[in-house]
Length: 219
Image (tube, rainbow, N blue to C red; front, side):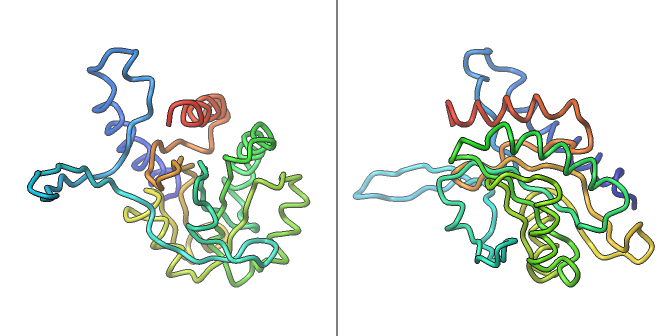
């Protein structure tokens, strides 16, 4: 299955979910991004009072290494709004496009400490921290952009339905030997997925910037 087909599935699916949240409410209320993914309603007895809570899908725990060989975990990103994607430095297809698009977003929020860009390599054997640091420098990536390396199994699992609603796998028949989505996933300060975009489209950039600003302003 091709990268573009998988991307289409991801973006279409979660666009439909988003529409379920915002299509039937007044504009004054819908000026908040939906929370994507399955949710679970729980009931808890607290001192004789039944309390109803909603548990949303959140990004699972992870421990990865950035381009400066620093450990990056959920604790590192605590209190941040971040945009996540999957790529590899030798990618001959969509990665040059998605990286250029991310660069515009990263530069826009370069002076906003609450916003981070997080790119996960799907080729950790080649994309060492040294290679990622060189790639970031050649790209002109600002300091709010983290390029992460970790075990393939962990990264691929993190990409999927249990994590960022994206896709990544090793595939000898794919260009460059890896198949991955070009999706960008927007995550809020509570590690909930708030939007999934087609990162290959330049016209997605203004929408992403506006949505990040909306999260900064209204959560």
